[in-house]
Image (cartoon, rainbow, N blue to C red; front, side, top):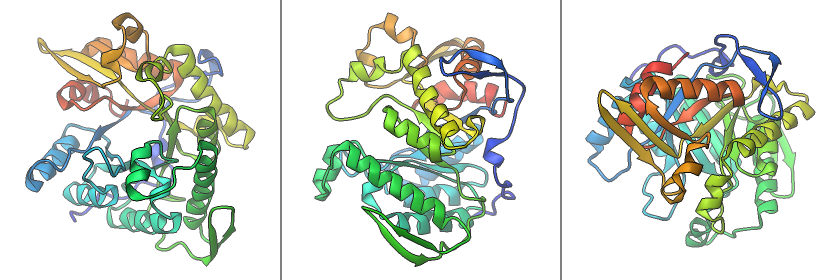
Length: 349
């Protein structure tokens, strides 16, 4: 693995930037507040449907374009080929600065003790470039294909909450004893110690109040998403990302953080654009999700999850979204040509 840059100090992924206004529970500015986080951008890993040498080249291209991280999902079905931990390791080995992000690991696929061990090792080997998301799982086909029970949402979320507690405690300095409904751990020391202290950044995201409150209580990064489930109409899923609903989701996480005794300003918010159309040097580059293709264009235009216009216009929109909702960590879709000029303009600002 190439030598990594010196590891960032604890909390470096939460560095500050120019002053802005804090957003209240309505999503509107609520007076002077902390400096907003600088923009960060993540790109999806290429698939394993190409030669491995080309795959590594594409990962290096993502790094060269200025993206902060490269993200990989966690599935068994639908033609999904990559194991996220292996892919993150190879991506870290192929680069020197790029962070590697599991977005997100399905909690039911791995015991938290095993996931901790892998993440702690990768954080050490990569020089502190790991971020990890953890979710309760939403795609029943994955569970059915592997013979895993697809429990009701309340059970899966409760199991996720226990897993998060175990993982965070294993990244601590004391042996862990834990007796829960779903997991038991006895006198286990979490080794090795990660480079990032107290632990690599944890992302928890979703669309439901239950998940977003869990994220507010425990996560470093809160992902704002539509509610995902096999029975959710794609049109309804994207409608959940309308401005007032988006603001409510942010508010749930912030309020949960405050109730748990955390400073809501310490949360980093992440989201993705479902429809991107960037006009750059006379060419319009597009990245549209299957959800966005089904939505009326007028309704789509009002969503915080849509980015249309020239580079200047798109940059101003992202600045306005950060001002209103506090979201600074963005996935701009699968077309690097669409995302690259925005990343060049805003990364680190």
